[in-house]
Length: 197
Image (cartoon, rainbow, N blue to C red; front, side, top):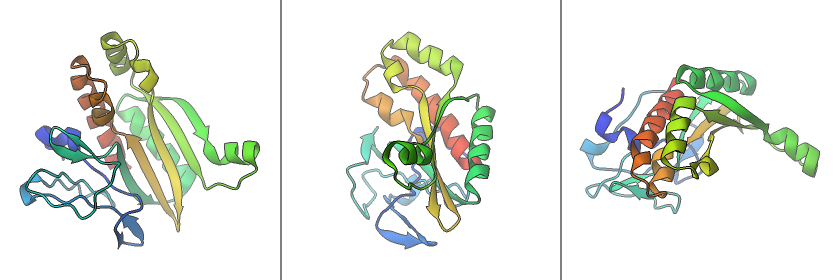
């Protein structure tokens, strides 16, 4: 369930942070009660912070977007096998009109290039052709920020994290008003992808 006026500021935290939750660390940026949006899907956390809220922990990764504290990514941690989760992510992307243009196996690359034993970590380069066309028409240099990367990584203990770029944040720094609606649309789609895993 999405709230339209706050959809572009959904925050999902699943990275090292301030406290333990179910065996994994999460970071919380808290908020006034009326500004919280919580999707009851897995271990997803959506938090908004406005002036009435309070911070549990301030991180440089957070940025202000329309006066709301947001992250540059959208993420969720689920239980399951790594290959199966990767396939679920690809299917969820397809359901939102994204094709996977690139797939980087970071573990295999680290082993081949550096002889390092890295955890399972996949980077999927996702593209929604109609929205990509709109973005490139609005700004011909926006291709430097395409495609939209989605990562799947093994956290250990059967826990898999899925995270996607938050275009509403990254596009804000471009300063092109024409990209605003496009970025919001992509953010909404990627939020639904993450929620569906």
